[in-house]
Image 1 (tube, rainbow, N blue to C red):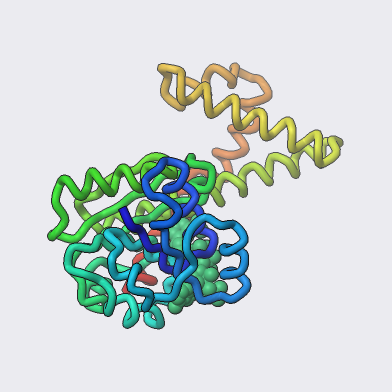
Image 2: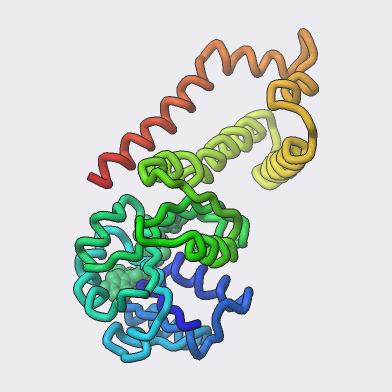
Length: 266
Ligand SMILES: NC(=O)c1ccc[n+]([C@@H]2O[C@H](COP(=O)([O-])OP(=O)(O)OC[C@H]3O[C@@H](n4cnc5c(N)ncnc54)[C@H](OP(=O)(O)O)[C@@H]3O)[C@@H](O)[C@H]2O)c1
């Protein structure tokens, strides 16, 4: 299989590495199209694929093209890309907010997959929601699942509109966790721990709590109850959160992220 990665920055490199790790492609068949000179040099040094230009004949032979430039750079790359896409080529865009119909129009191409990954893809622990154009068969969807699955879990959505909610929930999600963790670490510091100790306490708490949630046959409410005994310390904290509508504001924030995702894709 020949694969081109168009825009080989942070995310492009994640896919290049993941495809090689899972033997989806050999490095001589992995083509990296990148415009940033410094980045090109870095890619050459990494020796993970061929650094080429869009008009290299090998690019036109690719069965799969991953489009991973920033959304604002799409119009610049679109024409060159449209010229090399063959009808059977599968184009997978990970650009936030660029809709399938727009990609089809600008690239003059039918077979489009629109995917929304999140940053833990870097460690193979991401989650990617994706939708496809009508022209894509079930067999191709399975193929896409295998490809995107090299970076973590995948979820297919028939309704492309849901990708705005995916963007708001799992795409931006890591930042919400960092925000909460930062507050916990700050609280630790205010109570007298140094940064390293507070961070250690919070990190391991997060890790352990995640595994309990993932493995226990209990709902989140039940899990909260196992920690929060009546009149105890956890209850004092939870009461403060509830009195201040923390839950309501978290939900409202995430819905605002969805609203912004919709605005950006208009
Ligand atoms: N990071 C995330 O968690 C995340 C999650 C979901 C989706 N995404 C999407 O992933 C995409 C890539 O994000 P990123 O963080 O990897 O960005 P990035 O590091 O800036 O990578 C994009 C690369 O493409 C290059 N480029 C721009 N125009 C080009 C062109 N015409 N031809 C060839 N290369 C070109 C850029 O060069 P210059 O630096 O010179 O511009 C840059 O090296 C974005 O569309 C974003 O919406 C990211």
